Image 1: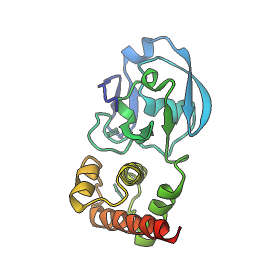
Image 2: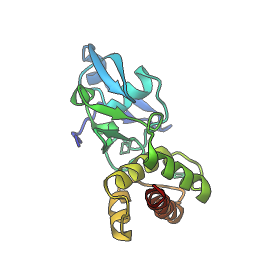
Image 3: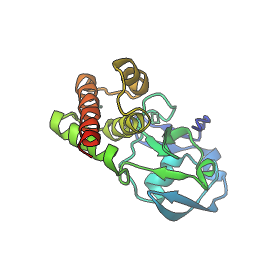
Amino acid sequence: MSENTNDAVHSDVSGQPERTADSAAAAPVALSLTVNGALRDVAVAPETPLLWALRQSLGLTGTKFGCGMSLCGACTVHVDGVPTRSCVTPVSAVVGRQVTTIEGVSGPVAEAVQGAWVAADVPQCGYCQSGQVMAAAALLSATPQPSDAEIDAAMRGNVCRCGTYPRIRAAIRDASARLSAEQTAR
Ligand code: FES
Ligand code: FES
């Protein structure tokens, strides 16, 4: 996972990102990214955070901006299946790698997570939830039957200001049980 710091983007008082003079001065280059299984072309400065290439260049706004400093997990995507903070990952670092966002995550694990999230009615305001779902899906892909300690360790970096943590953990346990039942039924 690449988590280089990049301070080219800050939040203004309204919580909206703003660009510094440094990022405004950087020359855009043409890059081809593999996002949700498709090749997508973007023209951005190479050090632009992946988050902004996804949101602004590709219109994939399901991935959220929270802190911009790898502290909250709202911007979590998968890069080659690994949960990655897109706010601090330069877009140039993901060329030739598989980027998956909340819009494209799919397969049995994603379906189990989505089903469990709906059953537990996890979200409150919803802002953190795409990052939570991506972190949970990565956890269950690597460890389909996680212990409570493994759940806590995997989800520790994903902040929810609405405090939905108990429902998130219950949903992960439910998703794990769904995967186990599916495996048994085969
Ligand atoms: S916005 Fe990336 S970790 Fe907070
Ligand atoms: S549901 Fe509101 S921040 Fe998590």
